[in-house]
Length: 613
Image (cartoon, rainbow, N blue to C red):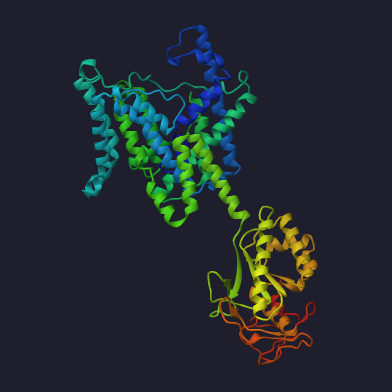
């Protein structure tokens, strides 16, 4: 507890051995130490050969914990915690809800009073099958006692809704149940066969764990190369499980996590465990839920808990040996029930069906297969969603907002936004990189086809200017650069002039390395979409078109296309009266209506304030 609660940022996360890690370590270490399969109970080994085998197995488990601690710490020091942010709220919510139900089902056996044989399975259908198959073994004494404990714990947790002062005793619910259980065993002897034979924890070895730091090396049997694959799997599963629980608790309690601190804290906790006879530890789902349910608000709760556990191991193990199993089962069931978020599924159904499907996939994967499969599905879905969003980025055809004559926005969001026939303004809302260039090519091509058809209706035979708004493009790779180079040649082949607006500094630096501004023409790179549109309008007027801005559904205005004798727009032309020019131009302007005569490549081609240097 102590290393994590000192360095970690989660206020409720309880660190310790967990079921998933135990199963993974057992499944992967037994093939490396085959003789251990013959040992039924490692705490009662007397045969010298089995003692030697168990010692070898224990060394391997401690060495594995040491390797995992090194991996954790390395990930934290290298500040790779951002990787965990790929887990969306939807997939984490589905996983935590499925895991909470699974863990709750695993504790039902202590309420019903009989054992079930699940092996390594945690599947819902297997739990239902086992509980149904052995229902005749129900012990009514344990069942009634367990149900009573659950009602008491729920009362402590929810009683404040009935009477506000009860909130001060909310955290005492688990302790109260344990005290009642211990007193019932001591006073009523309910653990005796004649009095119901309520199962209790039994003997707990007293004393603090011994020093095992000298077990870390040498790694001979099994070797480091044999342990590292298992260590990587355990670290990844533990990391994802711990961060998922920590994120769920942080969201529930309204604070932010520092993922790198969390990971370093887990690494140091594993170092401490590997020094003190403990195998790999991580954030425990059930203990964290109990901790949260008890009202923990700071990591100090786990610091105090660690000292209390040490005190109990030294002095009170005979007392806690009499705690009934159904009391512990009730505490875990009520604790994990607070992490079941079925209402989140209803919310996601209302706001985003794709997120709802991700929630269901993560939930059912955890519930009907295993926690590991649920985590795998959660990670896989998170990566797929991120790739989908970037591989098929949002784009928009832009139009001028009538109320703000220099503001251009998505015509789908603003249906009254006005466009100019023959001038297509298009915005890319993502970085340009290898995964999305093909999708962008297709989207631009489709937009050009539709816009050309619309321009034809307005009397302009084709698109003459394609303006790309680069404002959201903060990164571009080599494939993105090739895409822009190809777009220049494709546009020239169709008689279209490509214009780029407001590229970021990083993008401009990448362009300069391949001389892209020289290929495009430096006079076709503008600071704003409005400056680019102002320039394209004037050039269109010089080509003989006199157009007015139109919304997509507006009726076409009277338009004139002079095929053989292009003339500059007159001062009465509506093409310039509707668009404000760039503010405070440093060059001398012409008449109020017509504006300056523009020529690409000359100093008067557009105002200097518009140029991207």
